[in-house]
Image 1 (cartoon, rainbow, N blue to C red):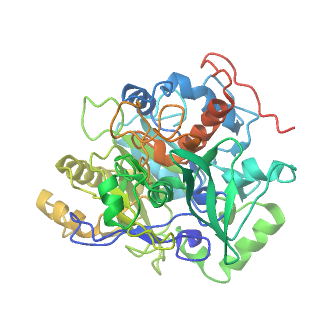
Image 2 (image 1 turned 180 degrees about the vertical axis):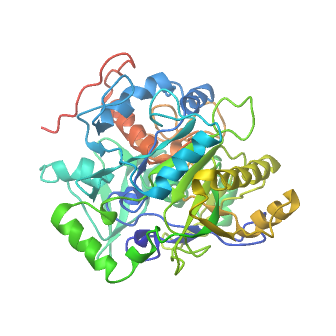
Length: 494
């Protein structure tokens, strides 16, 4: 959580006053480091539901159905249990933690008590149920996109990694991308591309850089003082992000991780990690969770649950100074969509961001039902020995109206922005890139990151983002796409 706080490794954006959340501004951290947000995220590895990708294909992203993307999910990972659904030998090390903590065990038992299914693998044949999250952790260390993909080839003569530079925009000649304008050491440079430019700045900064380059909705660009060079109205629209809420309890037994955040336990944990690469700091401590449906008849779960072994001060990353625990509940398929818009032609000025949470009444209903489900889980008998006072939202929030009012005042974000450069059919007026990730109407320019997701996945979006990069690599190289029934080839870095 330290990396998620404002600091030198984080762009630390903030939304505009959210219109359906009592004008509150929400925090929007983004990685300001090699590896991007994969270098600061929670290291939870879950792909999404099969229907997510089939929906992408149905919306115009031809070739991005579940059967089409499964080989890339398999290709990217190095997982101990290779199977028809899981891969081995890829660059991203993925592990399954063992469930040893009594609160983690109580959570899984609570699922059984309430009659929910057990899910053997959230990344396998079925996502619904209670199970254990995979982690992008190897030998007690984070596996970011940088450590997985860049580190092994950092000495290649045809690779230059430049840090301390700010991208100013895409340098266009007509509707042809020639290079990237950058500011480094106080100097403006044009880095020319021999073939193509691949924009991978993420769901906030990829649309912002396109807009700074004059690519976007022409009227909005002009109002920001930017010369419109290519009218592409979908740029910066369709911002999707998982709304998050949680229920929090004091613990009747001293079992939470709160003491590990203070000395001397913190020093002991650090020493254990240095000597063994094991212990509290060798894990993200997000172990069990669940994907559940708030009503029958849904194709896929619509709420994700994640158990936290400590209690945070609401609205912050700081810990409560007492033993506690909390269960997070995220709305997985929000209908509400926000936007990212350049404020001006100045690349150093942060864009205007609006998540627009709860704009759709259906999202409010799902968030309310998710909170009720979270309470039901935490009130199940396996938690009886641990569960003390409910400190958040608290016993005074019970009726539907109480919950709705509380959500407007306290609903937060899961930090999962996507879909601001939506992929779709080139004839779709609001699509930004085509199914080959090429910016529609602009030559030699592609976008490859979470911004091109047609809709947000039913999961933490990191795994799907890496899959997008894997598939895009084949599209860029114009090589045959593997069939889902064929074992994908291993990476060759030579």
